[in-house]
Image (cartoon, rainbow, N blue to C red; front, side, top):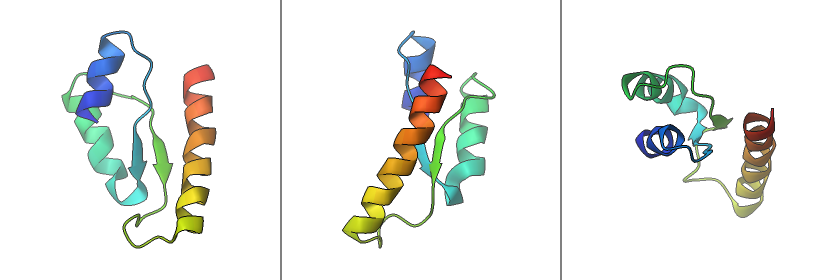
Length: 72
């Protein structure tokens, strides 16, 4: 989240992707880094035990959210 906020502040459109277990922590980090309300993509937790098909589905979900966040 720190990197994404830093890039956004530098004028580089960025979308961070978090799992649902870290949603609150990510929002807090964005606020602490000076960008409260920063929108980020959220996918289901966990990632580490997900099979390839599940990961592909999560990636598709993140892409849809990223498009919405970047393009409105």
